[in-house]
Length: 493
Image (cartoon, rainbow, N blue to C red; front, side):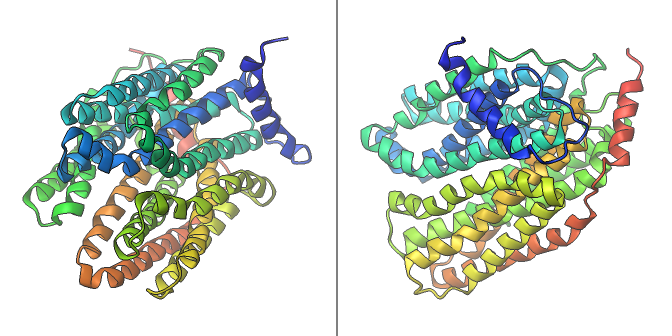
């Protein structure tokens, strides 16, 4: 018998993946690959620690500022530096994941993330901390698409893969729930602990990964350097512009310059992808209906969810006078409940089709956003806490099903690229929500009006994408199938 440390968690996860589908017809009847439970456990831990780190830092910012003598601008870059690198590199990370293999890319991303976390915890000054956070963002950018590609590879069966992705998403929900609370508790000990907590989780994920099989690599078809550079410039410029617009407004010169860089680089990227021999993201993949709608839906969902979290964080602290820890606790019921809703997305998809939880989740989120916008300014805090739940529940229902549907319709060797595109669009949505909604609530006298307007804008966007979701194909996209065939038949240099 193998030691429990090597088998218990993967075995439990594998039973969770398999048991709910005993009476559900499989698609294709393919069994999970050997070590699938271990791969899922590693992917879940990687996504958990990355999500935990994203939220745990915010609560500790005042302590970091006091310890390192940092002003508000420096503290902003402790958060935004991570966000900038994460968003800028997602497209490239997805492409590189497919090129080097999911397991290899995931391991490299985890190593970078763990080393950078150590450097964050040891940082003697603000400059070192911000630099280490930039490196953390690089590692996180690889972890997300590589973890999904790892699951796509381990679970060729659609039904089991949908369940595995729901469990993976649950890891992120638990990380989101634990982040603010853990940040408040660990900061009472030492703010550096919020970074050191990543080490045992990351090392455990690496240990599990070492017991999975090596992933296949793409054939050597050349490397699209121009595509990589323009993708990073486009995503980086757009994210930087969104971050700075939230602080300085959309008319600030550097915001205009950053947006201009993003537009030019994005245009060059698209032109290059249509012309180069070995594109970073094949145009048939970008133009496919499933890819376009999935990215748009993901973009709107993140605007709704992260926009709400941003707005209510400001509202509870600036208007209600709650402490950062109390504010984190206010979000806890939503995040804990949504962590248990994620697995139901696979259940609904198996019985009613993958579009059903996607559309239902969007309608639930939009309804929650509208009801929140109608709540009076004097509403008791407990009511605000309750009204958050439909927004989080809608996202938890839609995102796993959306991710699963997309991965079902792309060839396995393009899973990293497809998930990179999806998560890049989601990240941009979250960044733009903070920028645009931040501008709407920037004046204290009109804060509550701006909050209501922002929530209604988010609801309208989610409803608009919900209207397009029935167009998601229930069968693999012809464009994606063509892309897969063309890639397979491409002559080797």
